[in-house]
Length: 432
Image (cartoon, rainbow, N blue to C red; front, side, top):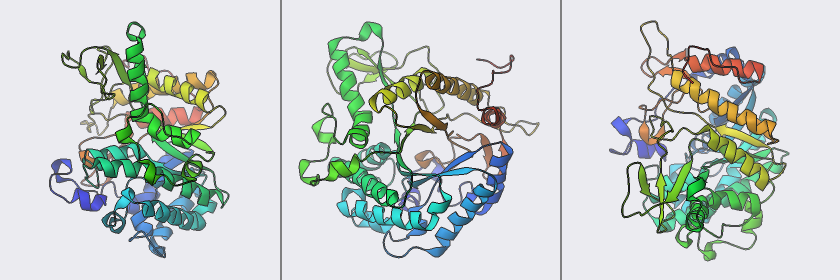
């Protein structure tokens, strides 16, 4: 459905499409050799459901599975463990034509697809992630319409919430039946209230905002329930929740994947009289506003840079699910990258971002958080959804005209981290 969406005029910046992107389909050997040269011992990638089952049903496409076998064999030859995501937003268009995630049947088709893929590739995969960021699928794809399938339909969004989670649960059950290690990757945003604003009203706003941004997906998979503070209009109607659904969704995970980019800050304030760097709080409650602390940097995406938020998130999840292994499955930043006259990409902002966030992760480990791994988003500059090719997240620069790969300064820094399994100090000349 992203092929359909990106070819629809006005949906993606500059009219970019994902037709070629970074062309790793043809260049996977080059890309795996690059990972090996950087000393990486793990690679997270996604399998395209339409490549394996073009119509979302029935027998698989052998060529699709053969590609993934070849990629996984190449990774194995270089000692790189594969963490594989089954759904990173690319639903077969035929299933979307039949209602997509707004209908229960899509969850059942997803479990069938998961079983096919695991049966064909499971001996080569270290761990499976069922879904990537179901919150984004629902909010951006079904509520605001700026991602595929481009809907602005609150009822479809509420239904998709439950059916995505049910799909996760059904797929996890199918995968676990094959002896696989299974988790899910959630985009999580710590909702923070600083000291002087910790009034009862703001704390209630924090609970509601946390339910909206995190709890609707975190609570079902960890605890088998929807959060009590979530607004009713965002939750699936009871008629959609069949007996046993929440038990399927809330079955024990082998690990939880965390995608962390930025936090949310709340304080007391009048939404009718917003100041600079303020906006209405997503909780919609009177007397509460969302704001951006002036001392925090922002990335070119406009996202706050707050490594303390990552530490807060890791320790909070560790308390909520004691002993559950955690992986940072995405963390990174866009930067204004370019190739200088010497042919280098000196992305000092990203190196600083990586340094501070990895230090926060290491601090969490020292404090007892069972953090088992870290995956940076991303290896290569790629097709960044509705932003097209205008936002670069990679530690490796992709020249989209020639497909030349150029490791950035951040790649060299990350290689030092990977080889030492430690966070080295920044060179003295680099800004902290």
